[in-house]
Image (tube, rainbow, N blue to C red; front, side, top):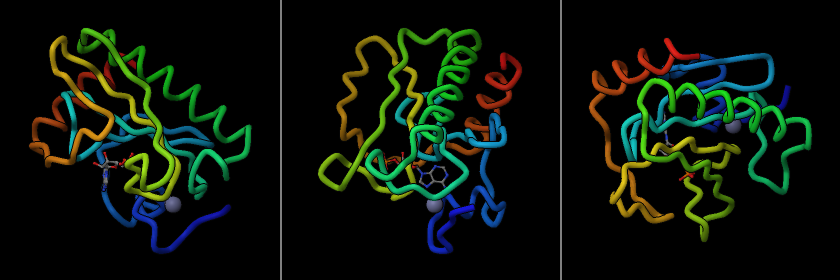
Length: 139
Ligand code: AMP
Ligand code: ZN
């Protein structure tokens, strides 16, 4: 298993640092973004450390997309957002801030005017945990 001891998402995979998990299988993990652009913002990652779309093997990115689809369904059922974006960033110029491949599952609120560089603002951890419980119940 390919891992990077300095990578924050590898530390989430290993359990070295905590996360608010929604789902995991043998290839992927999904957890809540701690700086949610909107309520319900989640991240899907491969367990293995691949930096970006150029590095990740086909079977790993396929597993991520399958999990993202499942999470999007649960988000839709539980939170009924106005829409959902699946977003994935590669390189600093594309606002990638964590060098471990990840896909954002990003619920939208009509009129939120979110841009691709939406900025990182800490969320309220109790609120994120309560939202996660609702999404989990719909998985
Ligand atoms: P990106 O900017 O596309 O690389 O996305 C990285 C995302 O990871 C950002 O939305 C951060 O808020 C999120 N993030 C960073 N550290 C953590 C963490 N420890 N737990 C959950 N989300 C995180
Ligand atoms: Zn990593």
